[in-house]
Length: 179
Image (cartoon, rainbow, N blue to C red; front, side):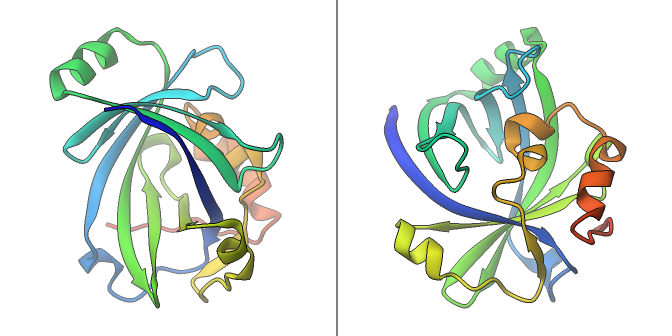
């Protein structure tokens, strides 16, 4: 079923340190393939999200404000994902997403793998703009990077950590690793 035009409110942070018991939190492997490959910032992706698969298009509600996104999603089968992913030449990224409880919220902590190993981002989602604006981040968050284009999903795929390292260091970010 198509999830038509849901608005997602979110904030994204660089991780300062690995929070206690993160490796005990539930997680899933995510594989994103963004298309078209030659686009500077593709908005369309196919995704393996644990045992679920989807096609998703996501773009800002307000131009240049990444904290509010329109999101259109179509579920697909594992076989459809396999067929599409074997034929697409899109930009790819793989990560483990941990669902870490923090007060009354769930932090989605993305631990990037392969060429982006060392990068860990934290997303918090909200039900509305007011809740988003009132949110105070936990101590394990280093800096808010919601509006930093280099860490946007469609921009980061296909890159190596060394290509974004200079921008991350301006926030005081040090690479983090989870075995």
